[in-house]
Amino acid sequence: MRTLDFAPLYRSSVGFDYLSGLLENTHRVEKNQSGYPPYNIEKLTDDNYRISLAVAGFTESQVEILFQDGVLSVAGVKEKTKDEVETLFLHRGIAGRNFHRKFNLAEFIKVKSASMENGLLYIDLEKETPDALKPQRISIGDGKEVTIDSKAA
Image (cartoon, rainbow, N blue to C red):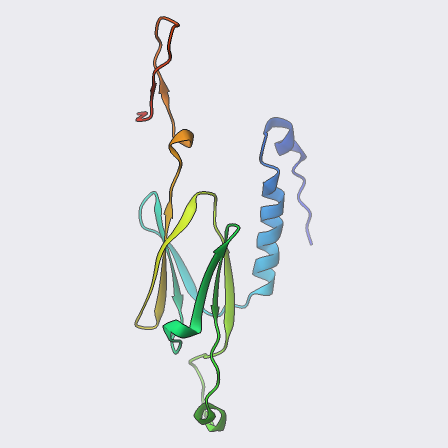
């Protein structure tokens, strides 16, 4: 495994020490996951994203979505019925196996909604930047009181 040196970043930045852990975590997550189910990540607007997962054969009750500590987990558990156990497939191209996929979400990304349609699971995400972190225009005055305008150009 390759080790990254973050010392130059730490010399000129404050509060980014979580980056090394995030990168290491991402590497570990990708290493442990297979390519199933296939998925897309789309940027719809500057503040809206969508994750689409192909979950053909799963019902809404067989898919669980959890969001905790910046990690979005999607798991599908499908119990095999008696008919499926006894079926002899000559070719099986539609996977129906259980899965567990994780996505690391950036700060201020919130899960807005989830829906399932035609074998695709859609998870809509939204970036909600707090007003305190948005750019602010500081007007120059007579030194008595500072006026802050949150609608910076």
